[in-house]
Amino acid sequence: MVNSAADQDESLRRPAGIHSVRLGDTKVSFVPDGAIQGRPSAWLPETTDEFWAAHPEYLDASGHLVASLGGLLVERGDRALLIDTGFGPHTLPADPGTPNGAMRGGALLDNLAALGRSPEQVEAVAFSHLHPDHLGWAAHPAQGGDRPVFAHAEYLVAEEEWARRALLEAEGTPKEAIAALAPHVRTVADGQEIFPGVQVRITGGHTPGHAEFIITGGGTRLIAFGDSMHSPIQVDHPEWSCVYDHDPARSAGHRRRLVAELEEPDTIGFGIHFADVVFGQVRRDGHGPAWRPLDTRDDAGDNR
Ligand SMILES: [Zn+2]
Image (cartoon, rainbow, N blue to C red; front, side, top):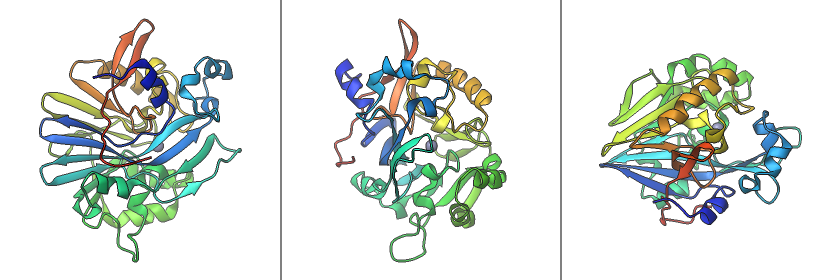
């Protein structure tokens, strides 16, 4: 089912709540942690102020792009995998010197509970990449101690990403966060199955070892494409790389292939930073490929 045009407009400028999709025996849910605002022509440097003036449907009342922060819970029977862990319990004010507006995390564990899971039940945490807005709760100690929040989880990181962690630190991932992950890290390779029906695909571009996750079940394929795209406008314009892309040309090349792939039948995309349209399909309108959000709202909890 696809939302009405009016609903879609509103959903492009608010952060995502809980959404769930069923793929056969597998349930896949977005677990919200918070939101970040981006200055549109700073986040997507190839865009102009004129472009955004013509597309106010993407901007909040303060003129920012709205991006969700969170993780993707993959459940099959009793088993649970979490892909990315949000920003964690931190708030940053808007910093006029950076491309970012305000940034806030903190809701992920409450939303995990609303979905009926405790962090102790998560058998593994997989990371799309090692930026602070994806490893937040995994690098944060559990309340009242120094044990990790995901007490029984191993941390799955692409080999290429882990090997280049010094570069990621140099670009701003806190050393302390990498050190907190280190004892739990198991590196994974391109094509590896990390959970029943979940395969890693290393794409690079955004970071040296950026990973996507292909989740299959019930005859459908879901591509959790991490930070390959930050906004659904990049489906219309895959040539536009984000200011945070490590290799913008590689990122753009991959995005073109990804958008074409998302147009294939029985394929769903998951964009972790998309506004309240995290699950969708790519369909052609009069202007070319466009993001068509799925109506996947889950009522299990107040999540914004
Ligand atoms: Zn990110």
